[in-house]
Length: 98
Image 1 (cartoon, helix red, strand yellow):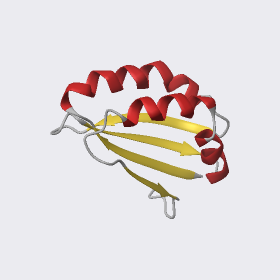
Image 2 (cartoon, helix red, strand yellow):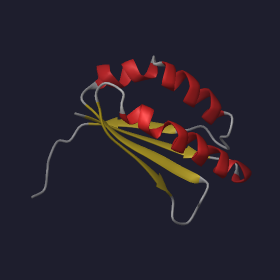
Image 3 (cartoon, one colour):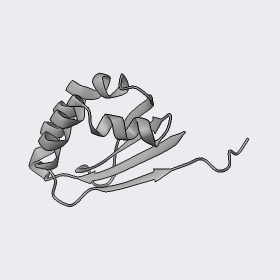
Image 4 (spheres, one colour):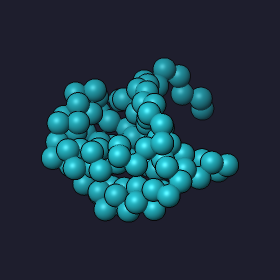
C-alpha cells in the first residue's frame, strides 16, 4: 500500500474555488482503480493550507491516476490557485502500533 500526502497552500481568496473543485471531483478520484481511501484536511491555524491524504494499492495505481482524464481536469484547475508550490510525499507503512 502507498500513502500519498500532498500539502497545498492556496491564495486566500481561492479557498472556496479549491473546495468546490475537490467536492465536484472527490468521488471520481475515489473511484480510480487502486484508490483505497481519500481525505481532505485543512490546517487548523492556516485556513489556506490543505492536504490530501490518499491510500493507493501501489505506485502503479497512483501513476495511472496521474494519467487519467480526472487528473487532467483537476490538477490544472487546482494549480492555478496555489500561493506556493505544493509539497507531495509518498510513504509506506513500516510499523503499525497496536
